[in-house]
Length: 112
Length: 113
Image 1 (cartoon, rainbow over the protein chains, first blue to last red):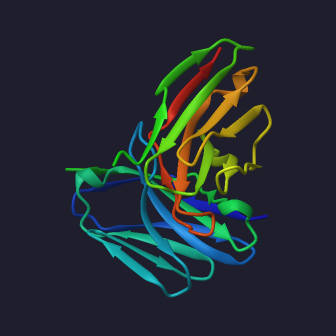
Image 2 (cartoon, rainbow over the protein chains, first blue to last red):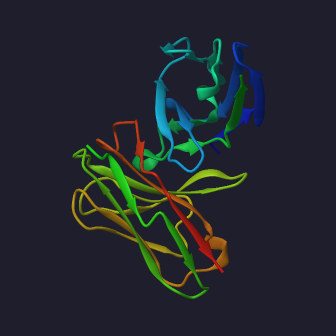
């Protein structure tokens, strides 16, 4: 069964304190791994798609990396506006209709 | 470009009542999806429509029906609401079901008493 586990569940950082969020996954053939950002009361906002081990993508203070078993979302020198819940999802090659399997998310809080 | 829009934003129902959640996208996407988000459960797929005229069950379809009204609109109907359907519902769309990135709407927060 395809599964996604994110850790930690919650992370509190001081402004400027870099850290990483983890997404471990099991899937029967990875088609893609996705990172979304979700602000309270809003829908998930797309950040990155990673397709193969070794791939990396960056956007401002965020960098996503992928191995065969997990993905990391590195946050460099975070600012309070980076506070949000970060969701990881996978799509397997055998998933019908574009079904994404989501993790439960990591709630990030960045204090000034 | 509004992206994906959903109505209503909030709704309170009594057990047994019915309602329809509306979703529309203006990105000319072929595929549309309905998810529910519950604390501790993550986002789970209810139904999807790979293209206009087709719909298929996702992970948690029981108690729901859908209609792909046209290419833009995809509605979710609760025929007889139950407290277990209290959740936040998100609609999403993608260019096609072979195109991986899905874009989400703002959500509908539903409470069933």
